[in-house]
Length: 497
Ligand SMILES: *Cc1c(COP(=O)(O)O)cnc(C)c1O
Image (tube, rainbow, N blue to C red; front, side, top):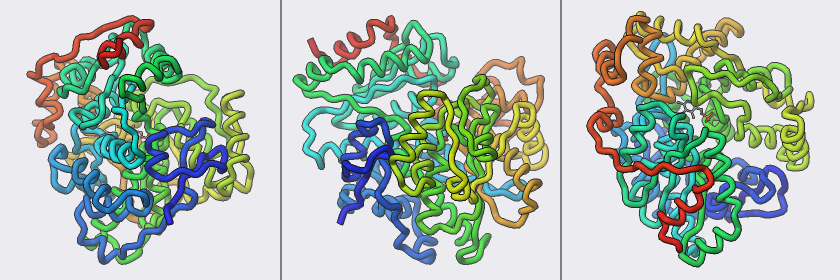
């Protein structure tokens, strides 16, 4: 019997995993969740000897039950290969009493690679399984990071094309260089005259354009999204928590079934929700420690039971966590409401109408394994500096936010004994200016690539391929357009009309 997926806002329609992956978002605006969370069916002794790919299979087969073994293993092997700069895929480093799980060894040196390197294969396999004949066209608006990770994931994947729109003057020079040098005949990168919100709105309009959809269908294309709410992005992320636990056990750091804590720098709530799923599968996780930056909507939610996005948006040095609506939180709300879609839909309706909602005491009780806190901007810089001076290990700004919150957790709770895994979500090379000036203000005078070399020298780490490549890479994309012309740019690229 297949594990079926339902929307978090109504449980009438049931989809298979491959149908949910193809669809992305439910028609009622809800997110797809499995009808029940599956359990791991392999022992710790078995997990202990598994490679990353084998662990990923052991986890994903429990969720994606309508994929054959061959299909799933094929997706996994195509995703987690030498695009990663280490055969371990996610190595772990101990520093100052915590275990940093480095999720940034993929093509774009940030944790989005963990999901976006496999999503294209899950999507094309899902299309095949459901007899979709059309080619899948991924459309994305990006403020920098997701666009490049999606491009790297979809480049040269048969049966797909990817078009990324970014604000021409709204991303960092390194981010722009990363995107406009993207190889692959099926990729298109377009700068727009406008800001990120306009790019996003433009993409949403194209998705909603029924006439364009018909034109495309006639030409053999259909749109899809690589958005972080796709269940095909969430499930692959469960695997690395299972892998980390098994490695700690294999290395004698923990005893059999000894509980660990997990600390996650959080934005859209996808990464920490994957840890919550891992715990529900039976992985011995004690506390789920949710780390925010100064956009501390989640900290306030965990401390008061009120989610309130009506506040000022703060630009921080950890931009991938600058978020006021954490989309994936909806899946947690649904679960703590006892898998009740009506209750969840009511709260989401309140969020859309007033920007806020409050959960019941009963629901709050279900959050007892979560701990939330935040790290301010100055504190984040202090964490990077102290870690470097103490150990030589260089944290990126997002991971430093998590390290700061873990320190607060230990002080608040007195729990200094439980072994703790901290999700390292980006390479320091990705945010070299913020990282280096945290260590010493004098570095601010250096140019971008000078900083990269200096970081490599003082941290004694090789410059990652992702950075090395863009130093000399040729610009392959120079399309720039007005917001109003976005649909025509899409038509032209696809050769429609
Ligand atoms: C996306 C991202 C995050 C936030 O992850 P969520 O799953 O959205 O909570 C944290 N750090 C980095 C570097 C990211 O790119």
